[in-house]
Each structure stands twice: as C-alpha cells, then as structure tokens.
Length: 247
Image (cartoon, rainbow, N blue to C red; front, top):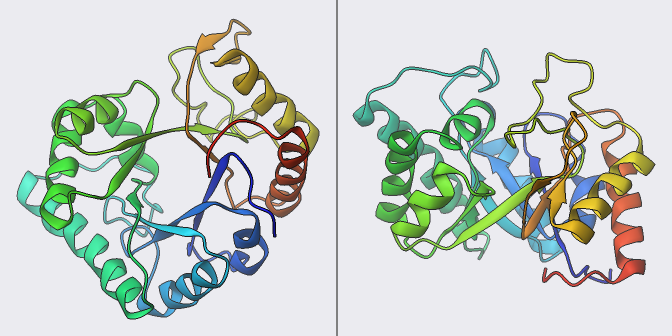
C-alpha cells in the first residue's frame, strides 16, 4: 500500500479487536501496554501486524486504572508513578524486540495525556522515565503543551499531534467525551476538519474562532463505530491531495 505524506496514528491493543482493519492505513500506532488496557497476549498480535505493514510502534502508557480505562486523573507519588510507567513501556519494548522491532515513541493515554498537556511536574516525571529507558524515543504530545516544552528542554524529540476526529475547546483542550459534540463521527466532517488544520495551521474549536495548531502526526481514534471508514476515507483523500507531511 502506498504510504501517505502525513503520519496518521491510532491507539490500538485496547480490546476493540479491529487492529487488522486499522493498521494497514497507519504510519504509526500507540499500543496499550498494561495501564488502562493491554496484556502480553494483546500486544503480540498488534506488533506482528505493525511489522507486516511497516508501521512504527509506540508505547501508550496510562495511569494504572483499568476500571476507568485510564480516563480519570489519579494522584500518585513520583516513585509509584515512575515504577508503573517504566513497567508499562518496558513490557512492550521487550515484546517488540522479540519481533525484531524497536520502539519509535511514547504517547501517554487519556487522563495522563490531558494532564501532561498542562502540568509541567507530571510531564517531567514522564520525561524522566523515557530518558531512563531510551533517550532516542520520541514523545507524541499536544501542540505547545507543557509536555512538549519539558520534553524539548530535556533533549527528547517531540512529535506534536492533532486529532482528526475530536472537537477542540479554544484553549486547545479536547471537548470532554461526556459531551455530545466531543467526537466527529462523519467521515466527510473529519476530512473537512483535517483540511482546515493543514491549510491554515489552525484548528476551528467549537466556538468557531481559529486557534493556531501545528502538528506532525494526526490521530484517528480506533474505538468508535465509524473508525475504520473514517480512517480509510481520510487515508484515500489525503493520498489524492498529496499533502506535504512526512510519514
């Protein structure tokens, strides 16, 4: 399959079971590694698919909270936090190496992602874990976020991310999933949303006023009903447009 000139990523290995349909259209993937979801038996087949389609693999750690799927903030001390995140990333790293793969990046999940967007202390804890494991790992982060700044200051390579199928608030936070307009469900609307971001280097939040946003990777969520159709439609249209982003 022809590669795009834009990196599209998705969170996988989270129990949905649609990875074989998603991965052929991705440039990179974020594999759940035990915090909110993910076991050795779920990680291995995703790694095999990624290898087969030459898709870059990354760890998708979260607060250790399977009950809430990592979507609720947790209060943790640095020692417990670092131990959990280290264990999650290493579990995937070791399995990837067995497949002859190297991890490309780390992307935090859910509440951890959202908190790291604004909390420099928590971001520093996460960055320290990554540095201890492998300082060549990239960090997928929101644009101009606390995590982006901390990671850059620490010498890690940052890949800033936008969301193809999520609506934004005017502070660049994502609209809460508890609200009916959080997710963009229709493939045509997703493409319009993405093309606006590509053309203007801005996102149009729910209040309608464009806010600057730059990105090097584009996330499509794999956990809603239209995800495969959205991803294929986005892939095919961006390929046709030949947008100037590197995979």
